[in-house]
Length: 255
Image (cartoon, rainbow, N blue to C red):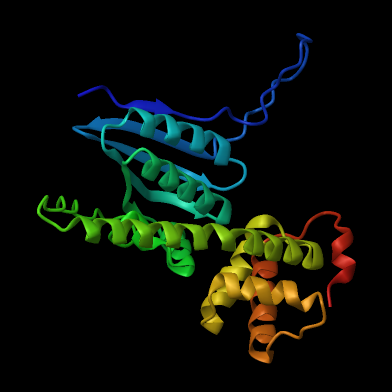
């Protein structure tokens, strides 16, 4: 078995000055760590840290390279991912699409609360198998019998492609809704995402439908009263647990 490969992205905040008298700047901690190890015909990939805009390019590059070298596909271990938003989900969906083109599979073996939450909210969990909740390993799925009818396999593939296409179509609305919350209430990306997820859960509304309602509200369509109430509660909650931006012109728009 090849030795596990350990990769990390470049850390932000390195001192690149040329003057000898410049005080070194302490680098910020890396936001993601990836470990890759071959396990027979499949490749195990463990990710620790965050799956968001700051880490998306590095993680996607590493996962695509791992998929290209894998024989049958990847088994992802995401139990140590403590933050995942729609950017991270988009990266996983693109990986799944690439695997289908290569006649391979991508299975999520373990999930953290953050990853499980976005998979459930977007209805994409079954695209990656059925991982056990919150860091527990799921048993490997048995290989489909060769005697299974070909039409069943074709139907399953069409269903997966349809689910993948719908999931990718909902991402722009979710990104736009998060931007609305950031601009209107001076929230950081993580806080805006938390507000969306919390409101979605409290109102029992699909995340993409809530996002579209927020977008429509800019055109004069009022949000349901229950949604307004839960949205305000979620915004107050994130504001009480995180410091406000030092200077934000959007703060004057808060109502």
